[in-house]
Image (cartoon, rainbow, N blue to C red; front, side, top):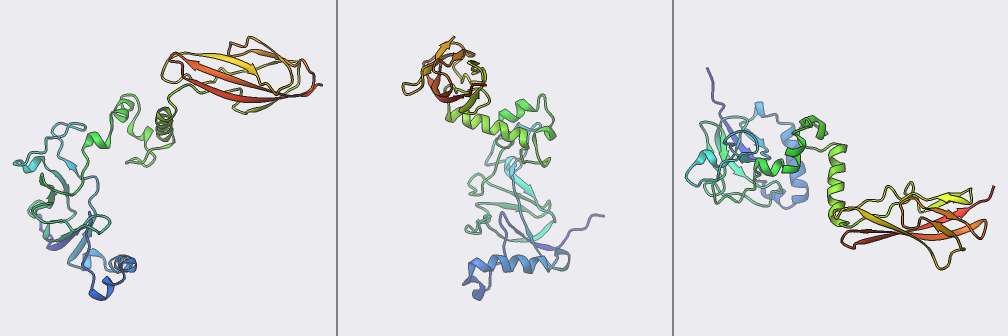
Length: 270
């Protein structure tokens, strides 16, 4: 037979017991003191329960990614979260920062028979839909990858692969044009032959299609000859012998957006 647990539940969306007047004068230590007090007072020895509710979301209609409409007259469609125990009373609901105390009836409704907290249409408590928790970029990945291929903890934290996708997406927005990239990405190179081949094949085209290349000696450089200056892999001949040579690579996309990379070559004759 299922027994109801008679316990006063305080949600830590925020849940917190109101501090005594003396402790309320020191908010910077009050929360820490309260945490340790609760840690030393296990829930099975008390009639109070502090509980966190994260990732509150609407009840899905048909599987993940399909959320019910937030209907003011249909409590089953409201964002909701289950409490660990069936409560006798929910004493208080606070924001995670403890700066907002939510109002019963307006911000939340508790079904004490099922132990579920619901968020009405006018609730100020934030919630996330499944589509917001799993954006279409991740749904596309999951068509080929498993959930554990893209998470670091098997729950909600991206792994290195997913973090790289974040970086690529963000940088793609911040740097919308092409990127000039020479050799191994080092702006300074050492040449030991008089006919030295340059390599820009790792340059990035950006969103506007293929790019063109143009290599040019700098005005303050020793003189040199570039064969194939409008290709990705030209050859440079150091006309003035050993020394330092300065040149630039400019890549241009189909819309005319450009990016230029300066290169310093040190020719050492052997």
